[in-house]
Length: 425
Image (cartoon, rainbow, N blue to C red):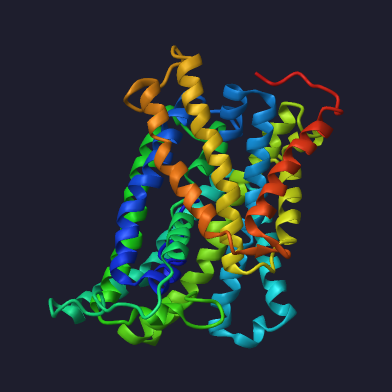
């Protein structure tokens, strides 16, 4: 749910260069990923409820803010989920350009949405196991690329690592880096479908943070040492997307380049599928609380919330034509607002429920739970600042995000007209 391999890092190299890009990839996990994964480790093990972050905020801050958390997360998902079918189509175009021309590209993206929706009907266990398998497959060509690149370098100088870029966009690179490292809280929404969540959530969070950072840094370091110019990662109509294919072709050969292309297509499907599993549990949990109509709680025989899956898939299909940069900008702003509510819930629950059993506990007491959210808050503020010139549907990205957030309060007022139901313990 956080990482689909090195795909998506191209714009970091193209905007900041190798050294700055590697520095970002090394530092940002400590300021962004680690605090979030620690927060999820504590709350996920203390309150392993279906709906995850929505339940945490609802319990800590009340019904209204719980709804806003769910609204912001689902609104962000509209833009986040549109990225992965787009990536699938971009890599497919490297094999068969004619297949993705015009309306055909949209049809392929729509096919990804439909296929993942059908697979999600099989339940959380099937989605989780397939995601691990796909991740291993898409990483295989990168292992070959890293080995061959380091063999060709063999200690001869610094390659292209120290070559400066003619123009840089540090703010844009940081935003893309934040996007590549975000999503740790998505694993919380399927807690009731996870075996021994009190033990497994903290271990999964901390172990994955290290694994993802290594997955990102090693291939970037290897191709830089092998001499591939950083400018190659910032060319073409789609920015640097697809440049890993060119790197593999130059350093290794056409066979591994084809493997990277196929891996890119797998990345699009492999990220979309588990994220669909995560997001679709939120409307289900909201309906359990009476904040959405009762039919959202309907399950199939594999305990998958099929109404929520169909509903979310339909909404996501409507946002398939946004550009990659615009998607990241609006996604970061909305996701960042939801993430801040989760850190506030962490601190509030430490203060209000000190006796709540916490199999994993962030050190430092209530003060520690407050301090751990400062770095993510500053990075979210910076991402908002750098997106100030982006426009979505003719509006500044920040204004658009603000309107989306304010719409949550209006929709909450409408939900109060629904018949109240007794929440399931």
